[in-house]
Image 1 (spheres, rainbow, N blue to C red):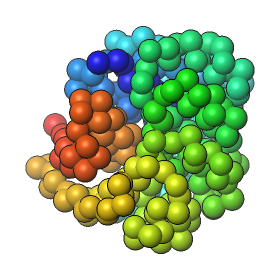
Image 2: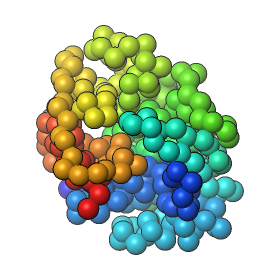
Image 3: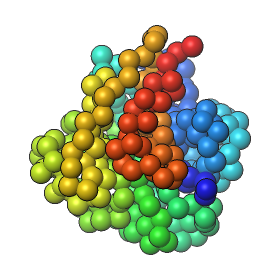
Length: 270
């Protein structure tokens, strides 16, 4: 089985006023892969001054990591109100270019059939870069937060002003309720199919998920945690688990069902 590729910016996260800690889809997906014993290849970037905070913990997970220097590291401050995360963008971070994908980043992902595209803000992966990733026959999973979030500092804003041609490059789009309403105008099968992505994963927090694939919408039941949880990175863990299932031969519904079950173990506080 080929390794799963993880590409995206690292982030400096400040949770509920706490000390800076590593974040970003690539970090949380890599952490999930390490817990599972799944092979992964990580392609990322951060500012040189943030390497101790964000790159060190990523490299400690033991995967091959290719990291380029960025002008600034993406940064977020946030806290939770129930299932809702209230966020502020502290720093936008650098975009990924076609030159990155054609060069060092694409070379690092050579041999990866599936790639999790860890965009954190809209400017990180625009259509040309996504075209380059998909153009090598790779299957891409993108979290919709990476295209609905406006790339500006200050209180996080989301809207639907995206280049929809980017969606043609995707095998899987993962989105939550707010992102589904923004991008599709509704959360039923008819609306989600207008996105034109073969597999759509609609995550509903503690209510489970839905899978839209092959012309059918299927609900996925949640698993109740046995103790307190830290939901940070849960979506990235779910995405990683889903791809692991698909790589191992599961169909979309079976892969999402297993991901919804197993992600609880990743976020439960021991």
